[in-house]
Length: 305
Image (cartoon, rainbow, N blue to C red):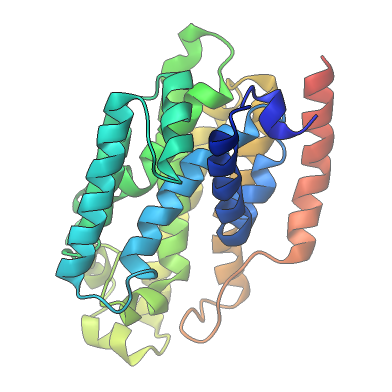
């Protein structure tokens, strides 16, 4: 029996929408997709739906409308986003991506506020080019990353209602760690888009200027600043671990794998000796296999209990 049928998704147009979300996940979110495979088949389509929504919005900002001005992109994103939000409120959608998203939101009673926050952060990408402090950055990170984990919690499940606060905290911290790891890896790419996601005040504390970043030459100051950011990623990852242990047993392997592979980006930054301007830090196929194989075994055993 296929994933969609096991999840109780039988209506043809709805199945097509979920299939498109899965395609986007497999195509653009290889690490995320690998982790999703560790979930029970009946949970996977709903995670794909959340990814499909997030990916499509991100493409509006960075890819699909590359020939448009930022104001035109913002209008396109706002129109599409408001349409999806209206569909969530109405409980039905004719949008190819929105149809699966609305169905997922209804099944798991996911708060619409999470999607509003996400769209707000996507609009910030078109108007905000830098963040003075870590606190300023967190407004963007909450909507662009933390809410993704919060949206997933009802799908993943927890050991009991009493453990919900701990899993919520873990979701926020891990989502933040994932996003910060991406920011560290993508400093050069973000500069190409006219953006700096590392807090300006923290960069300045290490003697890093905008001109130094634009020169794209690794200096002792940039190395020191990256080391501070990497330490934060690892601290957030550690702080999330107790909450991950309180997830439903059949969901833990998925999130543990995502944590190790996503946060592992900073290990790769160290491996390339912080040369982020000339090399792209990425998780090797060997590391994916090394992490995924025991995780698949843990997931299999959890489902048999």
